[in-house]
Amino acid sequence: MEKFMNNYLNHFKCINLETGDFPGPFITISRQAGCSAQRLAIKLSKILTGYSYMSETKTDVVWQWVNKDVFSEAVQEMIEEINSGNFEDAKEAISLLNEVARAFTTETIYDISDEHLIQTLKGIICRLANRGRTIIVGRSAGVILKDVPNKLNIRLEAPTEWRINRIMQIKDFSQAEAAAYINKADAKRDSFIEKIIGRKAENNDFDVIFNYASLEDDQIVDAVINILRNKKIISQHAEY
Image 1 (spheres, one colour):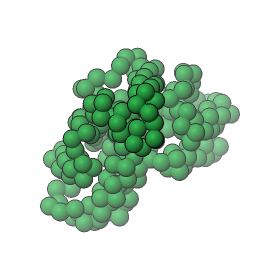
Image 2 (cartoon, rainbow, N blue to C red):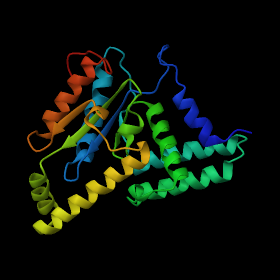
Image 3 (cartoon, rainbow, N blue to C red):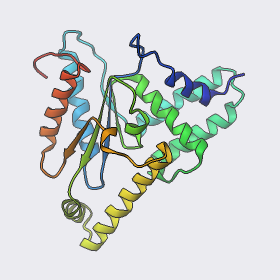
C-alpha cells in the first residue's frame, strides 16, 4: 500500500516540465504585516475571472482566492481520495489534514512546528496549485511553489513606520502596541518560512515586490495583470 501524503508530494515534484504538464496558472501573495494582501487577492480574483471570460478562449473558470472555505474544500477532496483508496497511512493522513485545516481556520497556521503537519500543509498547497486559477495568500505558498512555472509570486512590503501608522489606524493601537504587533507578526512569518525551506526568504524567491506604501491597490492590480499577460500566464487579450 502507498502512503498518501508521500505519494501526493512526490507526484507534485515529478511533474513533467518538458511537456508542460504542470499546475496553474496561480498567484501567491506574501506580505509584511500591515499590507492588505487579502483585499488585493479579492480584487484580482474578480478581475481575472472577468478577463478569462473575455479572452479568446472564453473560459468560464473562476479565479478563486484561497479563503477558509476554499482551503477546507481542498482538504475535503483529499480526504475523499484517501477514503476511496488503499493507503496504509489513511487514518494518520486524515488526522493531519483536519489538524492543518483547523489551524488555517483559527489563524494559528504559523504556529505549526511538527514536520508531519508541515508536510501536510505542503500537500494542501500543492493541491490548490494543481487546481489552477487560484490566488494563495501567505502560508509560505510562494516559497513552497517557487520552482513551479505558470505562476506569479508577489511580495508586498512597506516601510516600518508606515506599517506602524496603518496598524494604529486599523486596530486603534498605540504606537508601541502597533510596533509590537508588526514585529511579532513578521517574526512569526519569517520563522515559519525557515521551517518550510530551512532558510529565510530572499528577494529572488519572488517574481515581483511592490512597495505597498506608495501604490494604490488598483495600480498594483494593473501591474499584475500586465505582468501575467507578458509572461503569457493569461491571454494577451487587450482589455479586461
